[in-house]
Image (cartoon, rainbow, N blue to C red; front, side):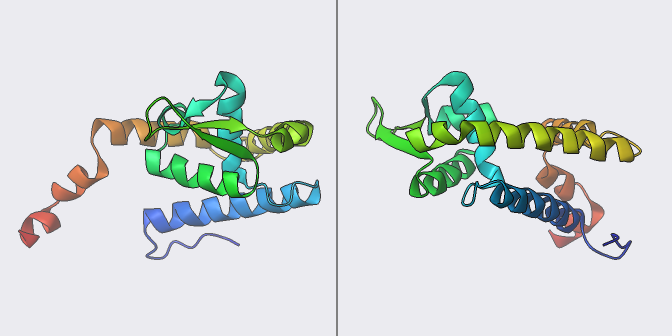
Length: 161
C-alpha cells in the first residue's frame, strides 16, 4: 500500500510503518515455530544474553526505552514463560532472567535475528537514505530539544496561552 501525501501526522505514519514491520515479523515468527514470541521481546532477550540477569531499570537503560515500556514488555514475557522475575536486593526491584524455555528457543530466535537483520539491510538498500541513520538522527535531535518544547515554541502554541 502506497503512503499517501494526505494530512496524516508524523506519529500516525511512524506507527503505521511500525505496525507493518512488526506484523510481518510476527507472522514470520509464527511460520518458524515461534508462535507467541513477539518482535518486541528480542531486545530484552538480546540484553539479557549480553549482560545476564538485570533489574528492569537497567534493562530499560540497556534497551533505551522507558522503565514503563520495559516493565510492560517484561510482564508480557513473564506471562508467556519467556522470562523469570525475582525480587532484587531492594524490595521494589525485580530482577529479570531468561527461562529454560527461552534458552531452548535461542537457535530459532537467533535465526530470526539474522533473517530480520538481512531483510532490514535489503530494505534500506532500496531507500534513498539509511532508515537507521535517520531514526538515530531523530532521536539525537529530540534529546537535544524535546518535541514538547518544539511544540511550545510554535506560534499556534503561544496563541493558546
